[in-house]
Amino acid sequence: MTETNCIFCSIIKKEIPSKIVYEDEEVMAFEDINPAAPVHILIIPKQHIATLNDLKETEEKLAGKLLKTAALIAKDKKIDQTGYRTIFNTNANAGQVVFHIHLHLLGGRKLTWPPG
Ligand code: AMP
Ligand code: ZN
Image (cartoon, rainbow, N blue to C red; front, side, top):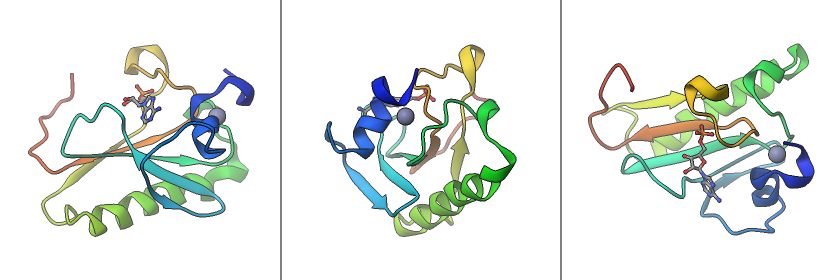
């Protein structure tokens, strides 16, 4: 999948609607359309990166920013103390369906471990 037919690039360009919870020049966070928990937010870079395998060394800081943004949103949603999970799914065995990296932020209920 390239930038031209990427659903998350379309969300960034606001060609398709989303419930945005945070946005700046580098990253965007929006509610997952099919939430798996009371809080389920996706944090993405505005730059199109297909999978974690494609993350370049020069993009390490950007990946860190996705995690820091998740932590700030968790605090804002008041799940930072009760707990939450942050996940990148990569390729088929992990069930990745959208090939623009996204950090899942899940919380608001007791999450089971290990995941399925
Ligand atoms: P993954 O399996 O890690 O690729 O997760 C893709 C996630 O994107 C799923 O949790 C979907 O529910 C979510 N998703 C797909 N399309 C949209 C959309 N238009 N708006 C918000 N979330 C979406
Ligand atoms: Zn994209």
